[in-house]
Amino acid sequence: MGLLGKKELCAICGGKVKAIFPWKVDGQLVCNDCYGVVDVPDDVVKGMTIDNFCKYRAFREENVKLRDQFQVSKQIDLGWFDTRFMFDYKNKFLCMDKHLEKTIFEGSQIKSFVVKEDSTPLIQGDANGLRRHPSNVPSRIMALAPQVDVYRMQAEQERARERRDPNYHSPLFFNIPVPFKNFVIEIRFDHPYWTEFKTATGAPDFNNEYPDVNGYLEHYNTSVRLMEELAASIMKIAFPGAPELSGNANRK
Image (cartoon, helix red, strand yellow):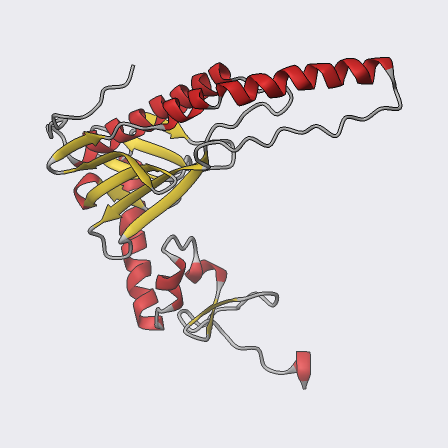
């Protein structure tokens, strides 16, 4: 029989299922139209029965209606290929997709959030208020200045030698590690399908050819300001009027 045998139909609507790499829910085939755009954590969709999935489809149909109400007040891009945060201050909506095709969250569904430098909290917010934590990154970078200066001097000498001798290739390479690798953003929800959203964007790095601590700090401060814009926007839709708690370091 093989390919000529009777094809299985969609477990939800009874329609045709794509022949190559078809969608499956609870081991049963589901057509493209019924599957649609699924935006839930992988472990949630993997644990769904067909009945659970049909309930999710009903939720999704209601959630999509919020797209017509969504008025973009602020867009924050973490990077070319990284997450985009879309905020609607008026309706207090948040969506992590510039086309608004993913889940639209209501501000009241956000329980808390934290921005970290790797695993170290930098900014936190919840109904009690916004907290800023002093970072040791600037001081750690400045402590590297002597090493960076030595490397730059050695690198210039090596480049001069390469200019004199085209057959010479310098073995020197820059290997001074930066204080942290990523800004990590975690948002926790009281939501039917999401308990947490987590994403990361790369931290600043040295220019390997011409490393400079001042250039690093300039990039770092720009990145921190973006994290502060993100935190302020989340506070605006989730915890409007919540105070900035005392005892926190203010950044310039």
